[in-house]
Amino acid sequence: MKTKPDLGFWKLWNLSFGFFGVQIAYALQSANVSRIFATLGADPHDLSYFWILPPLMGLIVQPIVGSASDRTWTRIGRRLPYLVVGAVVAVLVMCLLPNAGSFGLAVSSAIIIGLVALMLLDTSINMAMQPFKMLVGDMVNEKQKGLAYSIQSFLCNAGSIVGYVFPFLLTWLGFQNTAAAGVIPETVVFSFYAGAAILLGCVIYSLCKIKEWPPVLYQEYNGGNTVAEGEKAKSPGLLKLLVNAPSTFWTVGLVQFFCWFAFLFMWTYTNGTIAKNAFDCPETTTILALEQKDASGKVVSDYSAKFILDADSSLVVANGKAMAAGIMLADGAFIPAKSVEIIRTDVESVTAGSGDLAVTFPTRGIPMNQNVLADGAIASVGGVSDFSFGEAVDTRGAVVVVNGTDTVSSPSITPCDYLSRMNGPTGLILADIYTHDPHTGALFIDGAKDVTLQDPANASFRTSVVLNTESPEYNDAGNWVGILFAIQAIGSVLWAVVLPMFKSRKFSYSLSLLLGAAGFISAGYFTNQYMLFISFVLIGCAWAAMLAWPFTILTNSLRSGNIGAYLGLFNCSICIPQIVGALLGGWILSAIGSADELAPQYMMMVIAGCSLILGALAVAFIKEHSSEAEKH
Image 1 (cartoon, rainbow, N blue to C red):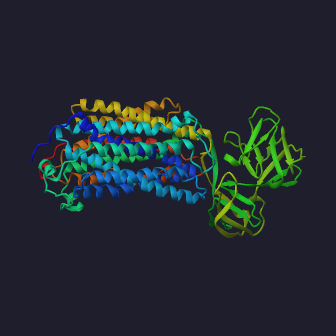
Image 2: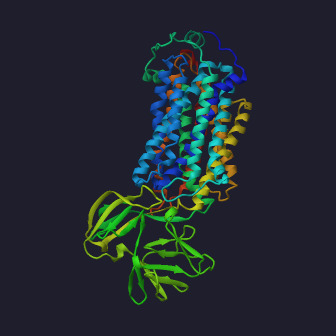
Image 3: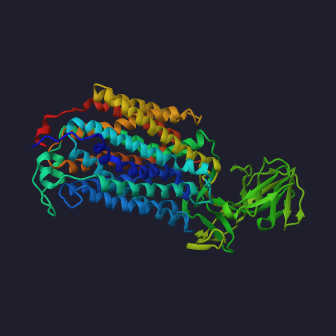
């Protein structure tokens, strides 16, 4: 078997340049998926479950692509056809995913569309990414593999920086960074469009610059059976390859488990952590369901719906918010919500609703510092409400307007929700209400179901405290997360230059993971948005080692024409820990938090840091060059 020739720098560069475009798509996905699904209405405890799909698809797709490309040859090569298919699908889906909330669909339908788009996007990204890793294994000799993967790491991080800063940059350019409830802001939508265009350009460049070796020449440099154009080579089954895998495959895979478990938590919970800790994002209480209890207090019925109406089609719950039946005056008089507005006179103006359906009430030009109850909803200034149902509100300095004209003077009022005013068996309608056109406000009902609330006195709302995703603070935090991820990528690029200077790969690998652990733990506690730069530079050190060393160490222990299949199988060490993290994330968050308090997402960053510490310790089990390499 011939020794592979040294390749010039630009040939090594061209082998990996397409990674730049692929990584932009991956960065946009990793930085914005939690933001997108939270905006669509997902509960924080469910966010990790949405992250099951990307690694699950990678677990299925990567080994298939790796094994299939080992046995494929076409006019443009054995790896490049898979790049083309993956990139084309990714471009199309990148135009769909950020628009999941813009089709006027019900919340549940929008989330389903988002899930399908996410599944297709990650599948296509995996298909497009894998060929670049395989091309280095195919065409680069062992002496240059460290340099080749370093170039790949640099391009990977450069693409990440571009993808991460897009929303922040578009906000600066004047694109809207907030939107109506359930709609993704323009800054995110157009970031995905720009990423799709760049990805397409990078794929075209790769097709023009990369020339894979013909079958006979490939066999001379890599061993294995010669494959004629248009034919497929026989390859051992994936199970047999696993059985015969070198020990390095398993020990590096153990380190990978702890690393990717940690980063899954970062992608899932950074948005919530930064929004609360560094941007003081306001909280809001969301109604998840209406519970009916028996005399002993046991829940006998659980009615879940974003919208609940009474028999007269009056909204009892609207998009997870309790609607007011009216107000009780201090003298015992009750005024229905349909005819009353409560306006604080010590504010300049107050707003009820959101987006194009928002209504602003002027209030005599005095500085804004309070809130309003209007048209049956407790609205707020700045996303925070001082009013709550069932508690008296001091109305001195307020105006109570009845039927648009009458003013009722009272030292205090008590807002009453519909549930508290119901008596005896009550018919309800559970439904999703949505509009095809938010500008006209035309409403449609989807999946309506009639139920009977037998005893309203023993019924209550099951609620969840969440961050207000419509608030400017949340969306500013979402943009800042992109900046922090870009800082991570910059730190990774700089650390990737330092890594080859260490004499021991294992030492630099372990050190990098420990630095990353410090970054994760500090990110859970820092409240200054600029101090977080330190955290994410340290996280970038871990990321650089994760991109450079595992594939370098593994490919040096592999021989023969099954490199693609082994790299595909090795991708399971990336996918499986993410699946485990996604399955456990919601359970862990519930276990360390309280149902009536905001989910402590910052603690998930601390847990991620602990996982990296375990990864650093597991590096000790790696044997860099196994004698088994000669067999494989």
